[in-house]
Amino acid sequence: MTDLELYGHPDSGHACKVALALTLAGLPWRATRIDIWAPPDTRPAAFLAASSAAEVPVLMIDGVAHAQSGAILIELATRFHCLGGESPAGLRRGREVILWEANRIGMCLPQLKEARRLGGAHFDPAVVDWLEGRFAVDRARFDRMLGGADFLHGAAPGIGDCAVWGYAQWLTEAGVTPSPVMAGWLERMRALPAARTPEAFFPAD
Ligand SMILES: N[C@@H](CCC(=O)N[C@@H](CS)C(=O)NCC(=O)O)C(=O)O
Image (cartoon, rainbow, N blue to C red; front, side, top):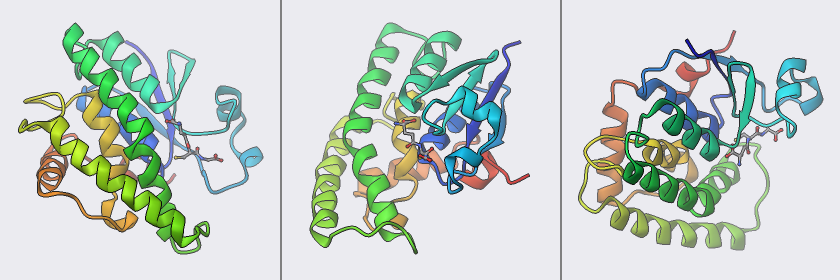
């Protein structure tokens, strides 16, 4: 059986994307929590050896390090033929959604969340306005991408849904609101038997 160890932290939407995908796919995996708020050089040596940027997520697959959440999701779907990886069309859909997420919604939501975090980084109000404007465009695009289906991959969720879930789970914390279509999708995502809170995915020791 493949050994899967995921380095992550509950405040990392990028790590949550991978944790959700592993759980949805029914793959046995274990979490190793990394304190992303601690100075990088204080993080465990095994993690630093696996992650050149000292960033989570890193998924160790049989001892080989895989970084970048979107690339990890594509690796899982391809290697385990799951979450869209069952067909060329499903994989194509996954790649499209993942790259869109990384360029768009995954760019503005983490920043908006950080801008609103107590003690978080200071953002010029003009920057926050710009990020909110981007999110409004992304939200409308999300509605078109969903196109009346239950999930971005159709009747069942796939790696694209996991990618968007990473930060869309925190719209309130980011100070933005979903469209009715996005709210329906969020509700369906939350109702999945594999859904967990970030803390449950990466419990403290
Ligand atoms: N593009 C990367 C982003 C990874 C990332 O930004 N990780 C953050 C947490 S969300 C991190 O580890 N920050 C800790 C640090 O940089 O020291 C991905 O998709 O995996």
